[in-house]
Amino acid sequence: MERKLHIDEFKEDIYTCIRSRCGFCFSSCPIFLSKGLETYTSRGKSMVIKAFLEGKIDFSYDLAERFSQCTNCGFCTTNCDVDRPDIFNAFKNDINEAGFRIERHEGIRENIREFDNPYGESGSGEVPEKYLFKSNKDSKVLLYEGCTARYREKDIFVSMMRIMDDFAILERPICCGSVLLRTGNRDDALEQGGRLKDVMDRYDVIVTSCAGCYNMLSKQYPKMGLSLDADVLHSSEYIWKMLKEGKLHLSKIGSGIKATYHDPCHTGRRGGIFEEPRELLSHMGFELVEMPRNRENALCCGAGGGYKSLSNENATNIAAIRCMEASATGADILVTSCPFCVRNLKDGCKGMDIEVVELVNLVAQAKYEPDTI
Image (tube, rainbow, N blue to C red; front, side, top):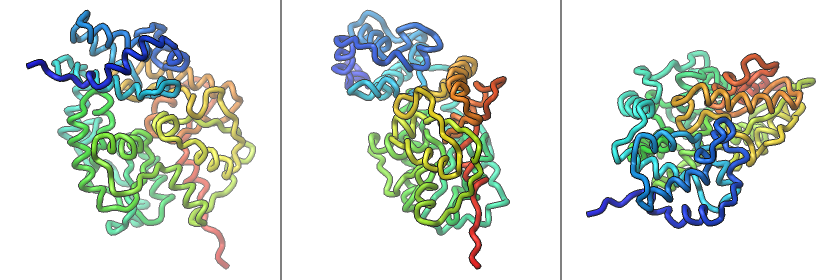
């Protein structure tokens, strides 16, 4: 009996793309900008899949390598009626199941299966003791910091604990499975999601500073039949809500400083969170100057979809393009609200006269307690 493929679900979308040949996916595709070949674009990948569906090519390591060249940024979907990353992730799934796996991504998969994080860290991550007293295991608000803030960009974890007043944290972190889904390991991602849902359904609100975690919990889990009972909020949404409710007070630490904001793909283009981070920057006194490519048309930082782990050099080159755009605005700082964007943009901005800053770190600096006398 012929094996049913995941890509079969998207045949009509593939042929629609080939028939239209619009090419609107080219202009801000980060891989195309760095490599310059059409087969790296959304339309180009559709042409490759068409050839596969018509029996002209078969599964191979070359095919696996080509489809791993994608950051899952979703820019192609901005000008298209279908979710292109969903299509390509489904095809990656088929390639993996045929036995053609990318070694580096397979290592990440094994790390998550064994250690519950893509970095292969055996511990539970360093929990910042300075603000640990504020955590409350009985709180109905969960601070889900994600793997990168827990194990790599730890200052973001510290800042969130300083900003929030009543929250719980997981004693033992559980990866949300975002990188698994985006590297063609849907079953593994589904398993992670099921484990995490059992834990998260104890809470009313889940707050995360990671754009990838936010997208996974709020957008991808429902597609996978794993809708959470809790409300999922990105840190920028939660902080803005605290500010509007009078539960947070911020000083004007940005007076005289120009800031430009990089929209993370998974909160901006994929989640529609554009205004909250900008409102927070303005509230803290920063002069906001926009890059030409912003909001739903923002250029990806280059790190997502497992791409930085696969090709750190090229991911950094993509980030450098974004850093040059930021520097051209005359901004003093480049602000974003995703730990993974921070990591890659810092690499891309080396040698440039602009500083990369995470939004929650600025908020933590600006937070103050008003006089009650």
